[in-house]
Image 1 (tube, rainbow, N blue to C red):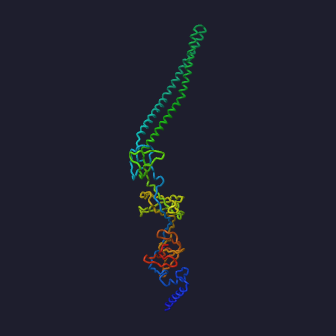
Image 2 (image 1 turned 90 degrees about the vertical axis):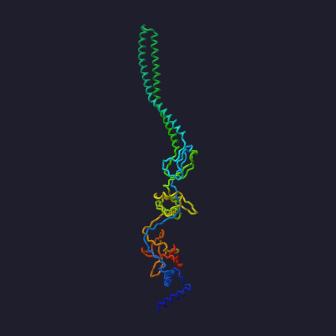
Image 3 (image 1 turned 180 degrees about the vertical axis):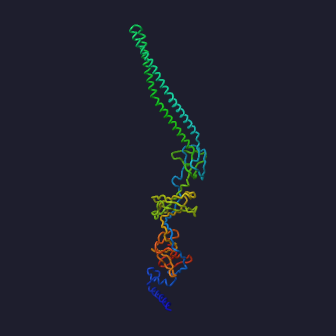
Length: 435
């Protein structure tokens, strides 16, 4: 009987207060009256523990992330455009779009008969000059030796002629020889002197010109070899080979067509190396400050929606990019090689960059947290009723929210069953509403 009177008194007090405008039951600033309200039903929001599924606060790693969209792109050097470096008719084309080709394998051949003829001509010129050098080197010393021997012979004759001249001169003074004999001896000596002088001059010329003649022919030989290398280089351009391992992505010509070389050689085959793909992610300006080189990332593409590809931040471009009137920054991601073969250029990537990690953090399901303008609450059981307990939240990842204070490991929080809807109170969102 006493208990019934107590309840009746409380009801009457609340009715009078409401009629006078003193209180509003949803106002969180009046905890004493709110407690009176809680005494009238199963919980603060009119729900009982049976309307919730209770889950424990657990320890787990919580990651801070930055979300971005991006595109699978080719790394610098992954795309090679191949053009003709000499002009001519395309004799053979060995590839088609989609073919895989190894580095060094032949892609195409340009007709080159004229170049073969020029190589033969240059080689003949080289052989002729090499023969001339061999002749100079072998014969010139012999010529110099013979000239020296001739000079020695003339000098011997000169000695004899001088003796003859002296003898005839003495005998002529004694009257034993005629004046003509003396004159003849004098003339012979003078002739030998002139011959020796001429021979010595010729010897000097031979000795002086020998190294010069050798150097001139050697220089010509070097020129011949350079000419051969030049023509052979042009000949090598007739056979076009793959500079990288890659897939043929573009072919613009066919056998029989004439390709023309120029300062800017037109591309007729393009190769791409699919092992050198990367992701260009566009990160919002609000998140770019958290992104650092070396951070781990993951992404998906539409072609393999269930597969998660791993990557790492390797570069952050300083210049902004405006996309859909939003300021973004390009972040370059290096893709793990184990899965890169599945990707293709220009695929759209949905990127998650892990910008921070709090290991062993206390966390609760995000569905259990509700928020007011500046506070977060969870529903807990107390004395068979549902009460709202304030908590301080931190990072969010997936289906969990970090709890920095207000709960202990193992505490149970309520997640509103989907068949129930909590009434809106003055405090904020009902339990289970996403914060």
